[in-house]
Length: 315
Image 1 (tube, rainbow, N blue to C red):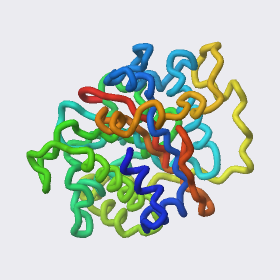
Image 2 (cartoon, rainbow, N blue to C red):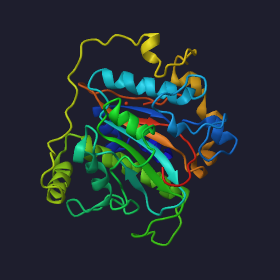
Image 3 (cartoon, one colour):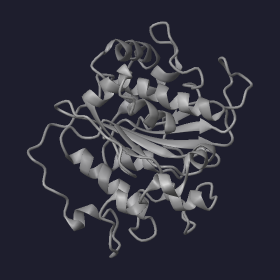
Image 4 (cartoon, rainbow, N blue to C red):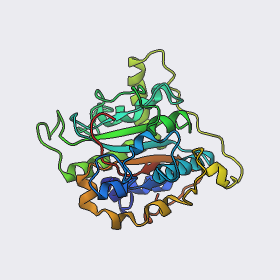
């Protein structure tokens, strides 16, 4: 996440300039600040596994997910909708960085384009030698119906919905083979993710077209014409209190993600965020006109990047 933020807020970086010009990017840097602050790997301060609550989050017990889901639903309804959602996790078992997607959802085999661009040779270049396309999976998996990527894909309708797992260990190939990842490597991976998003969604289509051509050879019967962009709506109505509630609880919902998180940077410093193999999420909402973005507290940028949760095992 630190690498994503570092790149996107660089005024002089050409890639950052293009991303800010073409997309609104919403970022929730940390989804579980209270849990991380007390040393939890994956649970909130109340002992809840937040990545098993996306189907019906409680405003009292899971306020972070409740507010984040309402925000994603609003972004999906407004303007051109959410074009991509990336949930950033840490993985303590497997090596390499890799992605979980869900190609049985509305994205179909198109879901494979981003991870393919990250980890496979495209136009003679491997974008990220710390990333493994071969270890990426595109099925739902057992007991994963209530995870962020599956709910955002199947319920909210965002075809490109991902969990990006960053290994606690290291890569199995490339320049860092047999080395353990350092903080600087995670920052680099975040910046390469931004490049992958641009190559997947940006107007310079040669990278995506090359990836699609290669994927068609793997999946000759698949529809790889692309995920349809929602039609532009008229001036959207604001969410009513009932619409903003994503569960059936009769509980007072937070009015914003910022209210839930407060000043995230003051809760957990950079060292804690990096060494906790932070969980975050990133969704890209393409806009009909260029739109600049700014980082402010817990909510900042819409590709949607959401929050940090410590994670263990295969999630």
